[in-house]
Length: 127
Image 1 (cartoon, helix red, strand yellow):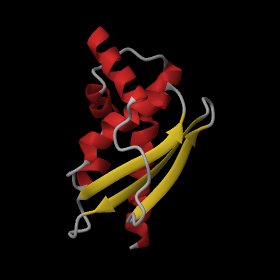
Image 2 (cartoon, one colour):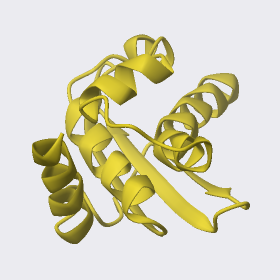
Image 3 (cartoon, one colour):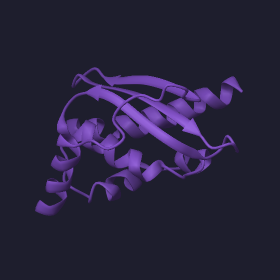
Image 4 (tube, one colour):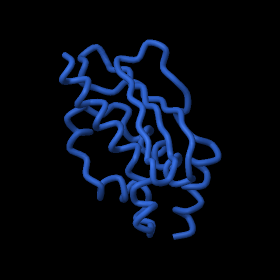
């Protein structure tokens, strides 16, 4: 369990894919008002308009929300939008190493996944 917590802290202190994409295909901001976590996600697609080429995020919040988004962002590169929409909570928890989270921290961990899925739905509706 300690190794997973070390990875979470590493992603929190050294987040991967942090920043903004200047010419993103779509962006979305979301937050967890109970905890104060905030994320803004930007995604650039491959030419097929179905595959994630690049994903970046900005935001602030607890270690779990920010590390979870960092880990998730690495995983999502190269994935099809439909694969991302189909991801379940359990899939994200596996990426996090199945660490034990309190009920409040579960919402923090899921913020990134929910935001990305919401962004894809909004993007698809707008097409």
